[in-house]
Image 1 (cartoon, rainbow, N blue to C red):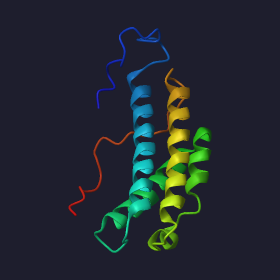
Image 2 (cartoon, rainbow, N blue to C red):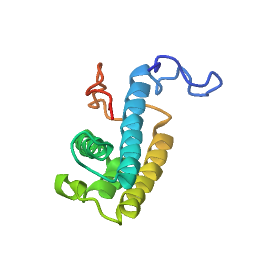
Image 3 (tube, helix red, strand yellow):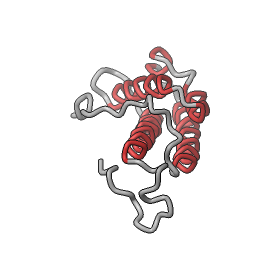
Length: 145
């Protein structure tokens, strides 16, 4: 991730006090977590199975892990995201129903809208808590289904 360089050379805030590389990294990390959650919800919406080593199972793991990480950040603007996924737990995610596309699609739409608002609100930099720790290494392994 190249957060060291501003994304737009004509940006009025470029190089300003409020736009540091650390702030851009935090914003990109949170935005990435939100994108991961939205994509995982969309994958879960179309999953036909949640047995181990299936895409549905991987989506479930991503949903639960990302939900937990976002909760730990304690960012007020993420409350709509957390509200959209609060009802999902291991048991409910394991059940495949005919209504999954609507349930998980609606949650994905809510996460996407909240993510767009969050990124727009924080593009100026300097507003995200310094407590957000951006990992230096990726975790997990690629899906091999």
